Image (cartoon, rainbow over the protein chains, first blue to last red):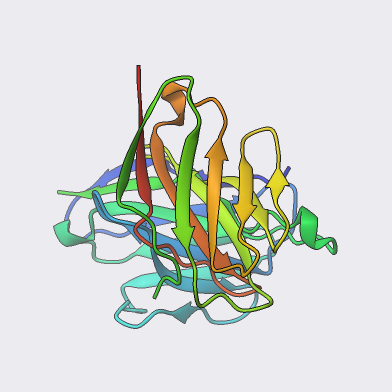
Length: 120
Length: 108
């Protein structure tokens, strides 16, 4: 089945530094990937849509200059949290869709295992 | 905005069936009903999806009402490892947005 690999799983960084999170589709090509953020005891919130070869589309309220998204290939999207601050500490999750022509085989989106970011 | 409504929490006894309801009264004809679950500190895991017919796989069964305005996810024999937050999502071909989900606790 479709697998999405996300790294690192956990990162601690100092306030003011930048952190890069990678999301790879291992056995399929993903022209579109999605980035979510999840705070403790809350649901996943869509941050942005990452499009291969073009600019990402950000949800309202998400700072595009702070959360840089690059989707340089059909199997890799990266999220860089720039000048991180403690309030950016969260669980970040990526997802991608492995599309099949058969609707019954469409498993929606496959999610990475998430990255726990702690900014100290 | 999520298009679904789910109870915030439910308990289930180990070995019994867990029936998780979801209301999606504004679902459109092209939208599928998907169920995912999220175990603590992990990414969401796909469970099952359907359009209008009932579906069953090795994990669960999905019962969709005839008018498609609601559905029920059934875990036939819940185990302690099924303790998780369960999300019911409706979408067709766009981005996937999550509601609050149902926190299912399976108790011994």
